[in-house]
Length: 200
Image 1 (cartoon, helix red, strand yellow):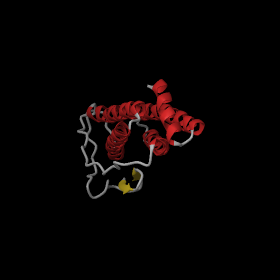
Image 2 (image 1 turned 120 degrees about the horizontal axis):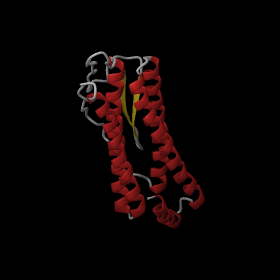
Image 3 (image 1 turned 90 degrees about the vertical axis):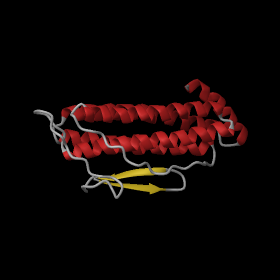
């Protein structure tokens, strides 16, 4: 699996190519370690290590958004994105714990640089919504891979990721709906930040 780290002016995107055997110049391909009768395939190990890196990167993105929002006075939104950052780290731990349960050491890879400035609260909402859709598609690919290999334990984990992403997309869609209602004028965004308190 090739891991391509692409930097855009608005957001960092990790896009896996499922046909390769390496994770890019800065990442090593992990190998499966058998612990008794049940083991994980090299492909699943690689995908899980990718999931760890991607979740860590999501946390870093949301932390940057949190700090920008805090600095600009969007205090309720800052709290919400700070919560998102913490949640993404927890998701990375799901994959780590799964690997460790098979006696496989999770990899700690470098993280791509994330943006530190944004066009506004509306920009952050749109980027977050798009990012969660992207992550959801990756989690579906992990689920498909595990099922195709008959790896039901990893499939159960992947389904946990998919279910979590359904909730995340619902949350970000609510923010998109609120953005449409309030608009993007300066005062409107201040009122939107006030409304976000109900989502905390």
